[in-house]
Image (cartoon, rainbow, N blue to C red; front, side, top):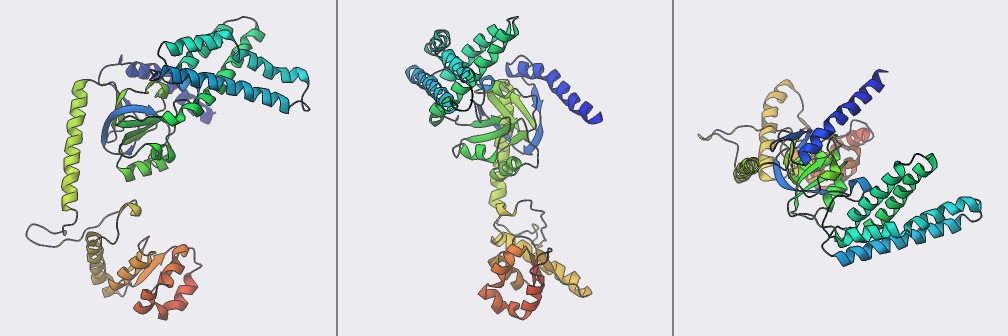
Length: 406
């Protein structure tokens, strides 16, 4: 009962907020209102919202002006013909499987697609300047609602047939239009669940921010966002994703908030914040390779808990210098108590990294079993004295704790 109540509470909470969020999207909830989410990657970005899959279903199709009306009309007619052909072929495949009366259901769908009203209404909307998916969405919605209002249960169910036909044609439209997908210059990628593949699909240099209605701070999307330095906010369950295509959006990853259709004053404030962050990053990059020491020349050890080793060059002189200082400091304390100094992690499992660590005076290396063979066969390590410890290495190779080289 408690589990069901918790699930219902979330649904009720989201439903109570959806009207407020819709007002925000339509700029009726205050110029500086925001939607609170969960931080996935820090930073601030301003750009134009673009859906990861604007044609996922009829409800999510955004409003958009047609750039080439003739091309939109051709794509729509081709999609209708493709679905009619597909339905006919499906009916033929079932000739020896189901009775003729059942197969006639496919004929009903073909007839619906041949309806003058469905096709003519959609073409009229396209010629009025709407792109084909939006025109088709509105036509299907209008006709389905007409059936939904009927009292007869049989006729009312035909509304679902209309929507089913609509979804099939939309899928064909997506195939015909996907090559023309354009992302804005400063793209805020928005979706119900933004994946790493979705992020990679945006052309380099265009991705400014990421907004995902689902997800967590520990998702792969969050990991990739951090690696790319792209501000990201996730877990925005009340966000009506289908309504934000093309709107100006601010992604404030520092506070896990998104702003939609904000005032010019707020946009200016965020732009100033972005400039300060860029200047600070430039200053950090300028000082990155300098030694860690005070202004009067005293060298200091630097300790860091690095979440993603792949982001850092472990053989960079600045990194090696910091590691060397840590090892020397460890030796001063550990050897006094006859305790070995050990290193574990990706660097220990890298052949070149292992050689460098041994040269710095590390007593033991810990690595994954997968890295063991590669490090063990390194000729340079053989010369460093690893051969005499081979029995110990081979004994440890199958251990769940990893492999060690002394």
